[in-house]
Image (cartoon, rainbow, N blue to C red; front, side):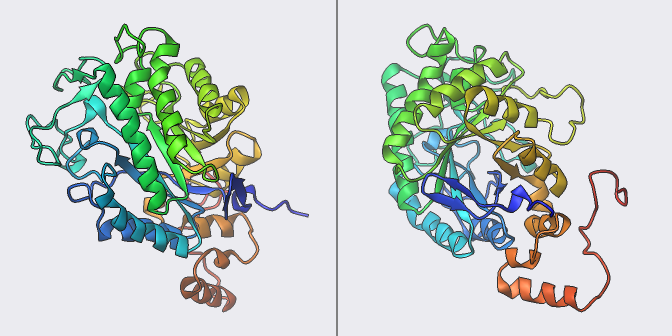
Length: 390
């Protein structure tokens, strides 16, 4: 008897049961208006829930207006943002998916134009709260790049204020109806800056040794867990390795410390400290970051989520079967095909594959399939090779 695909088996995380192991990775869309979500976000996230995804992640949402990467980032630094987010969580959960939110702060990488306008540092820009110019802050007064402005180093009281901001935002996320919360500690943003020996040149309790550089992340997680209900899962995104001295060994140690403080899942990405690529080749291979998820899972004894050029159904299934990760996060491929879970269910031989969709879609697609039209949908490709390869 053929073994049922792991990709479509439910997964229990604390008090939450995911309908499958497919996750929409948090992806910035830069569509917010002064921190508020818009109809764009409802459409964007809702279509992945309707497409059969198990866990849909809201993009990086900022805990502090100074932490926005661009003026178009969503925010959760005040209660006024809750109603718009609650509308989205209600819709997504109404279509069978769980919904998560990623909380972040860009630190020295804040205050840029949106990518399709050049992603250029904004020389000067009023803050999103109309409280003066938009100041860049970081663990140390070290610029992100030669072209970037040098940030101001956070004081000790300000670090504690930042920890409190993360906790307050976590409480708002709960009130907005999110099922999962992820702390963004990767890609060269503020938490990653504190972890980095290149960006963090402090000589106080938050810098110097690996343990001291880890302290801010640990305190943020402790504060978030204090405001985030015990029955709800907590994720943490890491850059498992980076191009400025970040090592897998340090990340394993971080994962152990965070798991002991209530983190349930490590989301395993890489890089982001500079514009240089972390991959050995200009063109990364499929699943190029999965090896890090596998090592963290094995050595830190914590569940992991794999992400990065995961394209094909059999590729995703193999990641789970081999024990490299517990969840598979898909980003840009899901933008290409919001119904990726249906495509995967058909290719992996899931019984009644159209049941992954709402009846308003599934009924008609199943009817076409039963009619014997004899063709494959436009997204069909068997295997992981070139189109048409077995």
